[in-house]
Length: 125
Image (tube, rainbow, N blue to C red; front, side, top):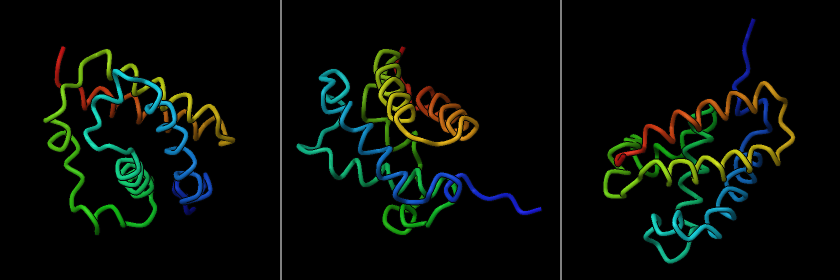
């Protein structure tokens, strides 16, 4: 029995593009969270997150080709991410997932990962 990747089950790159676009709409309107993004526009961050999530869930390895190993904790060390930022990030990601039409089991899998990732990036109390 061959198990399909979440990337394939949710519709591939178009799904991740929509998910991350919706997430960054929330970030753009959230000043305390937006302050963590040093670039004037969120487009580059949106591109990176889209590629990372697609790769993580079984899609093309474009993120690795463009940026190398994800090294997520190391890449986030310069940013003061506390419990409040973690919760804000997670709330916007959960809202983005809720607006998708993925099956509940896939939504739960996404949300479990996002909760883990959000806590992993926290580097302040």
